[in-house]
Image (tube, rainbow, N blue to C red; front, side):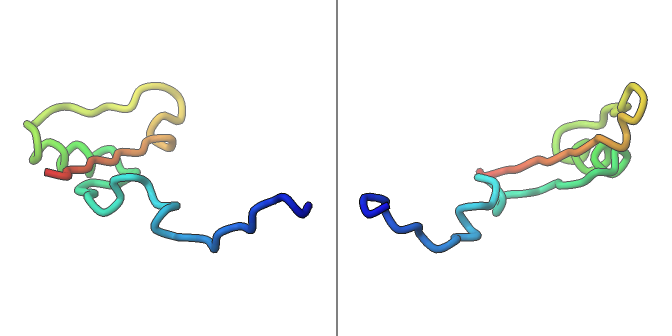
Length: 65
């Protein structure tokens, strides 16, 4: 249509998660997440519960400070 605005070129930075450049932890491994995030905050347990929970697990932690 004539009144439609032309599309802007794809901007990969705009498509990234908002805090992508501040990522400290990004893992699908529950044990690795427990260890890394435990060092940032304090030691703790992390036990995915339920059928297939470990396969669905995703941990991401950012710090913009």
